[in-house]
Length: 124
Image 1 (cartoon, rainbow, N blue to C red):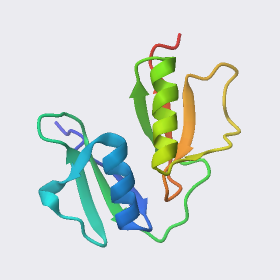
Image 2: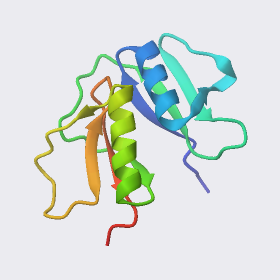
Image 3: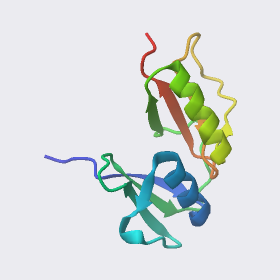
């Protein structure tokens, strides 16, 4: 049986991407290594989660990506706090044209423009 070992994001500025995602997720570079073209981030010792690999890419960012990250927050207050924290770390608000009437998610982008969502998991 297969399992997901890593999610991979294309980035154009590795140091900036590593700084953002380590601060956003509390992850650390695997083996302490940050390379120009490939860096794998993993949960800090004692924490759990899927690895996030960052690969250098010159491909343009998609406005409506087919694959993206969903980051979970426990309720609306936690979601709002996380959105503010992520914006302070360098995330950007995305003018998302596909929001439903009563969304449980907020669409942001990382400093490289990769879209991701912060989800209020308590939302009905």
